[in-house]
Structures are given as C-alpha cells and as structure tokens.
Image 1 (tube, rainbow, N blue to C red):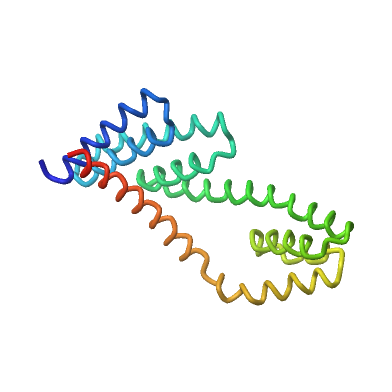
Image 2: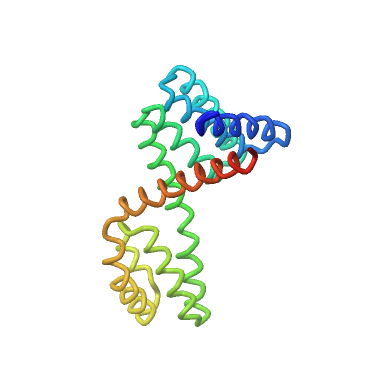
Length: 193
C-alpha cells in the first residue's frame, strides 16, 4: 500500500468516526482531504463530489452557528479548490464586514475606559480596533483623550512596517495551516499501520 492509499484509508476511517460522533470539523476536513486525494489521482469528478460534500456541510454549520470561523475557512478552502474564485472573493468580503462590525465593540470599550480614567486599557482597545481596521484611520477623531491618541499613534508607527504586506502573511499562515492539517493526517495514517 502506498502513502496515498494509506492517507485515503485514514481519511475514510476519519469520515466514519466523524459521522459516528457527529464531529463536524473532522468530517468536513475528511471530505476535503479525500477530495484532495482524488484530485491528485486525477479523478476530478469524484474529487468534486467530495469537495461539494465538504462545502454543503460547512454551509449548514454556518447556518446554525453564524460566527463559526472554522466553517468560513472550510467554505473558502473548498470554493478555491472548486475554482469558484468569485464566490471565494465574496466570502472574504463577507468575513471582512463581519469582523469590521464586531470591532466597533473595541471603540465603545475604549471610550468607556477613557471616561473611567483607564488610559492604558483605552489605548489598548483603540490600538486593536485600528489594527483590525487599517482603512479607518479617521476613527482617530473619536479617541477622546489626546494622551490616549498619542499612545495609539506611537504604537501604529511601530507596527506599520511589519504590516505592509498583510496579504502575503495571510497566504503564508493559511497555507501553513493546511500543511499542518495534512501532516497531522499523514502522521495518524503512519501510526495506524
């Protein structure tokens, strides 16, 4: 039995176990991995079936848990595998909007901390908000205290160079995560021999 066959055997065992225990994440990853194996074997029709199963499962999970980051990641990975790039780009915009909406909590807490005299905590909230919303630097006008604003601006200056190419860092982190998952499955396949 070659390594691909071993990985496929393990993936099918993972599918069975995931179904038994209703483990969404493992089941979704298993469908995805079998799809990758089929792609490598040039069995594209069957690969597409597995990718579509992973996609349907992730979309169903997202309906039940709207803020599930794993479901968004699974959907994005699967859309890319299926070469549905417009849909994958739309997903990125959807996630960006959700993150942006949630970061408003940071400005509210930052303002409240400032009102109560907790400058460091206020500064921390505004730094996090601006790091997550780099295009919203006009938000600096809403920082209530000049000392807090100065601290935020100083912290931004220190991190600006580091964050110049976020898209490359994001791609590297995403691909590294995929490789770790693949390696984990391979390790399990080797240990089960």
